[in-house]
Length: 491
Image (tube, rainbow, N blue to C red):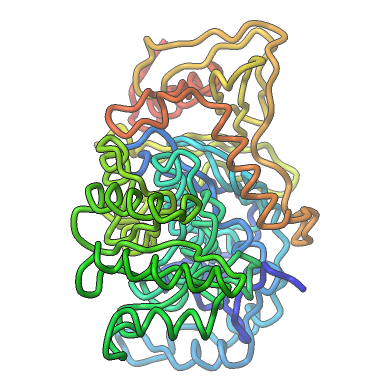
């Protein structure tokens, strides 16, 4: 069974913004559509005020690209669109071109579960400009959302310090797609399980869940409700104890837990969903331990995130499992990653690459030129620096990286320093050559990747800035292109 397929039964070629298609039409009309180009997908700022992001969304991109085609219904819809003169927006011959078009780009990307930083390309697309341009919106949609959620999950799991985090976000997620994407990304980011049963089926994620307040309210008393649930599912008893009075609820759970033991079953634990979670968990732990339920878990929920979990731990809370929903599935306090997709090089068939740079009044929005790759340097203990370089001018063994926003900040990389290039081939001429790992292997890769970075980049307040810069010759090329574009003479 495949656990990576999207739950769609139709073409997704129209999952794009109209301006991608109007530009594609313009390329076709001007005869420039086959001109070879290179685009990079990257983000400009770490999410959540943190020190890193965790790449995710590649599986979605692969599935999308492998099934990329304009079907008859797509073309019929496009033929119905009109311009402001009431005439068809697109020439029928262009729609026929789209019908025959076969995806034939080269795509390189950072594997899911890789720690990444601002301005590093997460995806590089090379091919006919008309195809590269049409793909922009869908690629950004997948990477922006899933990377954001995976990063949030990694932060929450870091705060939990090895204790299981359960993702409970489906009911608060941004639509069906948002719920599924959030569950998958949260698992890659470190969550132990999800409440989302469809995500369990599609992606092979462990699923967890017991009962809600409505179960308790249906019965005449709380203890009757617990007893009925224990009779129905004796091997899945985590009792939600805060419907009426939390500590009385814990006592009722203990009473039913003793009866379960007599039947050869063990109560898994109790769940707290309101009130002072630190105080209540400490009191609940005392009650459970005194009654001989030292192995019973205390699950907590109620609008948790990494900051609240960190605070609860500082207060000595006895919570051992964390249920996180709204603030994980909706990436609370940062609604979007802010990833962008920029042209960096073009060439005519058989010609030399012409490097491109986008200017802006804001320095952070000036793009990087070249066909970019990211080289990560490391020692025996941890990663030490990342270099963005041009594939057409690879770095020397004795390399220097330059902070692209402060040329006085430079880092020398000694010869023979071990390294790894992060972007790997995914498609060549439209054919996939990359074997996607299982979601469980991706999750393990994420944990291993995070462990290779200094704790400073993972802290929540004023995180350490990991060294990332341009290889010196790429920095010089960018400077030259900026000066040329601004018509500034220089020596």
